[in-house]
Image (cartoon, rainbow, N blue to C red; front, top):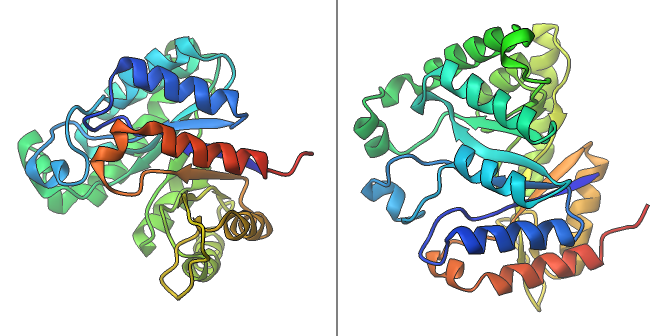
Length: 280
């Protein structure tokens, strides 16, 4: 099972040097994938969680592709309705080609109503727009002589039935974000049923989970996967492997933007996980 890391590309402590150090640290610790988030306009609803500066994901990943050698690069998740689908198709294909086939395109429908309004995109149509855009991206990539996409894998985020249908229709992987293990156990049979109903292959399971290491065990039904002692996190990763996860992305951002001023704390958590990772 591969392990990835969601790197904060936003917040008061983020700048090109910090992003480069994040990439070198994650790659140096032996992780397999580096992913970043997506926002375009930092409207008040976005800024509450992800304040400026916010580094646009394609630009950021292109910068980090040149700073790294082997680690995969991805979006978790690109908000599909924000950009024209042919622009997304071109940027993703070019980035994958220029990075030597390292791109994963994680996608989602988005949530920030004020940001949708600022971009002139209908918030209430975001699900339908996402489906239409993904179909257009797939169609563009079929012209391999032009786009040279190299088979960019699409990971579809979200936990609703509509999101699961979208993952089955368009995705190589289903990419749920920061859930509890019981929720994931219950959702996977829903995904299987939808795939069977559509007569399509079952997407790969590639969740993104919180990473919050604690000295004392975290208990209770609200505990999310990846939260607790290193022993609990190791058990969670093993359980996800048994559930069929091919990749798990660790998200060390707990929720306070000031964390970006002290990335060393997140790096230490990642180093602890890397030290406990089974060696094949």
